[in-house]
Image (tube, rainbow, N blue to C red; front, top):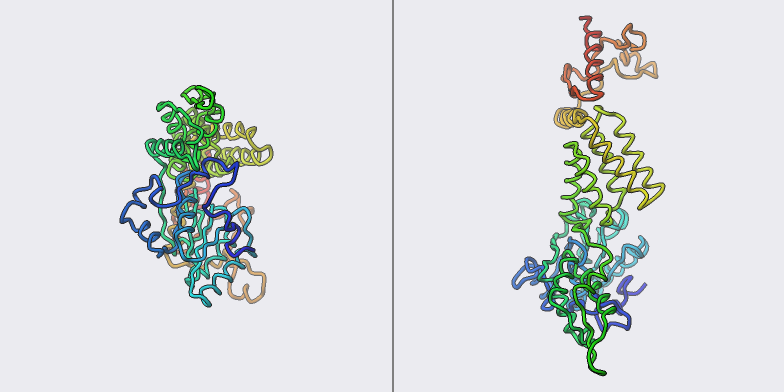
Length: 450
C-alpha cells in the first residue's frame, strides 16, 4: 500500500488531467481561495489558525454535500509538513487501516513526524474500522480528520468523537454559490474562461437557487449547460451563450432542499413524525415524498415508521406495528422506486390510526424505576427452582399458576415489594386500548375479589 494510503500523490491537488470534471478542476487550493464557512475559516478563527500554523488536532467536519469538507482536507494536505494519508470508506478494510496505523507509529517514533489521516465519509466506516484508528489517536501518532454528511453523534464512535472537535459546515448561500460559478467562468487555466462563455446574470441566479447550497451541484450544472450552449459570433471569435432557458433544460428536475445529513434532514423527519401524530395523512405523504424524492434511504424512513407505530399508536391499534414492519420488508424486497407506495401506505395507515403513547410512557416510567432505585431481587415466588438446593431456599414457594385460577389470573404480586401497586401502563380510551382497559379492570377485580 502506498505510504499516503488509499489515495496516492496523484490524488492530491495538482494539475487536473484531461476530462476531469469542472468541480474538481476549480477546487480551491488555498484558504484564501476558499469561499464560504467564514464562521470557522475567517481570519483569526481557531480552525484557520491551526491549519495555517500546521498545528491541527483531530477534527470532524460535518455538513451537507458540496460545502467544502474534502476541499479543506486537500488544502491541509498541501500545507502540512506531516505525512498525509487519505482513506475511502468504500475501499478501506481493517488490514489496510492497521497497516497505515503501524506505519504512523513508526514514523512518529523514528522520525518524530506525525501523520494526518483523512477519513472521507467516516459515517460509512463500521465500528471495527473506526476502532482501529482509536489507539493511534490516543497515542498521538495520528491526527484524525473525519468528513461526514451524517450527524456524528450517531455515526462516529463515542471514543473517537470525544477526542475530536466537531466543526459544522453550513450549506453555502446563494451569493456564495454565484461567486463560485462566476469564478469558474472567469478562470482560463482551470475553469471555463478559455471557452469564452457569455452567461446571463439571471442564469447564474437560477443555478445558485437550484444548487441549494451545494457547490458541486452548481458546478456540475454549469458544466452541463455550457457543453450544450450554442456558439455565436464571427469565426475564430465564437462565444457560447448561456441563458436561463438553457440552464433550465440542463436541470432534469428541481433539487429539493434536503441534505440527508444536517439539520434539514432531521427537520423533515420531525415534520413527518408530527404530521402523522396529528392524524394529518396529506402532510405525512408530502414530507415522505420530500425525503424519498431527494434520495433518502428508504430503510431509514421505514425504521422511523416502525418506531412511530409503537411510540404514537401503540396498542390503540396493534396492527400498526405489523403494517410498518411489512412496509420495511416490502422496501427491502422490491427496492425503490417501487417501494415508495409501501411506505406511503404505511404513512397513511399510521396517520389515520387511533393514537396512544401509553406504551411509550409506561416504558419510560418503568425504565426510570429500573435505573434510579436499588435493583431489588426477584421475589422468591417468581423464581424457578430446578435444583433441590433452590427449592430448599424457597425458590418458587407461593407461586400460583394463572391457568389454574377461575378467571385465569392469580392474586399474586409480580413486582418487587418496594414497587407493589405501581401502575406503569395506563391505557387510553382510544381504539383497541379501550378493550385493554376493560380487561385490566376485570383482572384487577378478579385478583381482589371485589
